Image (cartoon, rainbow, N blue to C red):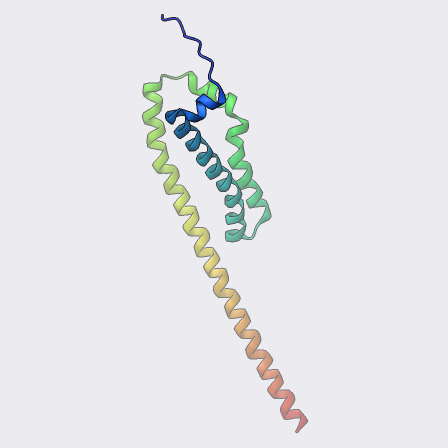
Length: 140
């Protein structure tokens, strides 16, 4: 084992180091992206489904891994990593496929609801025109 060298890094030295500056910039951009995703996911689910409960469930699902991080970390440290990483890599396409299927189903439900709403508005207009025409005939 080699002895660790202890260097104190001042803020100025960290900010002037090119590698550290790139890393910090990447961390800031990543944090902004994660925050935006957390905000937009709930709004997107609310827009697609119209349900406050599903939007809250989506937000909870985004925060749940953070809350369960220590437990998940302990579980991830137990199996052999050479066996775990390929399994996780195979799970990602399945998750993406499930997400796309759910997204397309919600989108089709949304368009069906839009079409139904459009049909109802058209029917209301027609009945209001018919009733106003009847009213005009009765006045004459």
